[in-house]
Length: 329
Length: 217
Image 1 (cartoon, each protein chain N blue to C red):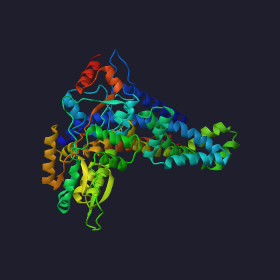
Image 2 (cartoon, one colour):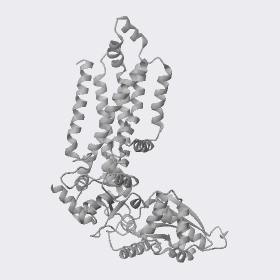
Image 3 (cartoon, chains in turn green, brown):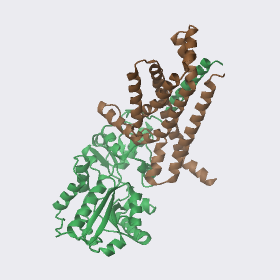
């Protein structure tokens, strides 16, 4: 065969392969790529979730099992920061928003009520090394000043200030403490080189705000100095640093402690799961959970407010019914 | 054996779907990249105006120096500016095509420029027209170099396409990212092994095509 003929054969093979890929598309990814279309009165809803939600036992798989449903098409997977915008501009309809994210309100989204109680409680609380507490026992009293002080609504507002209004986490934290009259007035920092605590946080807005808040509290009520390491890249990094003694404390969530760190079965009772992580962290790692701040940064299913209202969806179970109905049509 | 059966029971469907998405993304990216880069490379090789050649090459090289993650992010932001979809296959493919251009472009250009001038002289002496020289002398002789460029672009594209999960374009990156976010090795393997196999298989096929197309002497 001449080279020219071989090239023609190759081109034909490539075209056939491409055609086969396109032909397979509707079989392998049913109705992927088509925008939300209306069949009858029930448009098919599309979902987008982040990678963690799609792989955690307390995420999508557990949700489907608990409520007994699936989305008619595979949910899209994308970076968590992009979900809110994708939901707002109609690229997708349902996302796994974090309950205390300020963008839920900012983008006019609405959280569907988890009426069959699947989502775990994620109460945030400071986790601290027992050694550190022994050395500086006043920390417990000072950090517990924040116990129950931050409501869901308040945390959402603080996150919103940083995410959407571009405020600095430190200023937002200070403003909140002043509002609640929680700032102390110490005379001066100790010059003792031992009088230092190293405070960590994960690298997202809420954790940074909490980190700054704890820093301000400690520095205004005690003579301790705080070394801040506020942008550690994720749960396991923070936790391993804490165990190794590279940091002395960081804010953690009960659900994450239970499922991600302890690998225990899910438990949807807030106080029971708090007691479990408190007990197990002390026994296994010699780490102490102080009192929770009060808010619950759980996963949610979230939609555009306008769409949810026009479809009459307020509860997750209504969404499930709706999805089953749209499949049947 | 039980471990393997259990692995495929849990991930078999995911692997199939995401491998398909990955092949889809990479195949059309490469078709578009070849369709752009080979003709442009041919034009550049025959262009007598040096600044055009060097600035085009520089442009392609600059794109290559942008980290792939940043390029994807840039495309998303640009798409948002001009009102194109910012999520899914389109922005992912734009970024991947831009990335795949340089190796093909550079190899096409180099492959044509490095030909022995005496050969071309002979072709002209035989009375061949420029068009005939291009299709019957230059391209056949430069083909191995061009194919090498396409192979490089293919392997890169398959690797970089795993990042497109971040903007909702699917692919095997979905599984890798799930493994990373939840520290579960089985997801990582379900994403990584097919991606690595795909790169090896694609490179093998193209190596065979290259040999098959090379004129026997």
